[in-house]
Length: 79
Image (cartoon, rainbow, N blue to C red; front, side, top):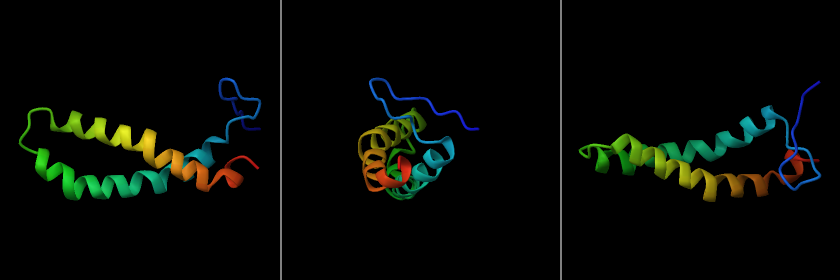
């Protein structure tokens, strides 16, 4: 039996971890590809380039990619 925790303030349980992993993959992939093509080459000479890339990817995942993917997969994630 899988354990699903509820989100704060929600009566609906969180999706199972395996569904979260599957839904995160299509969000992470385009950000990774675009970052490696456009962002990393331009930041390679900066002292904290890895930290900057991590921050940009984190913001894009949190506010752009995951809300979009979660909305598209809403019925599958929490039937």
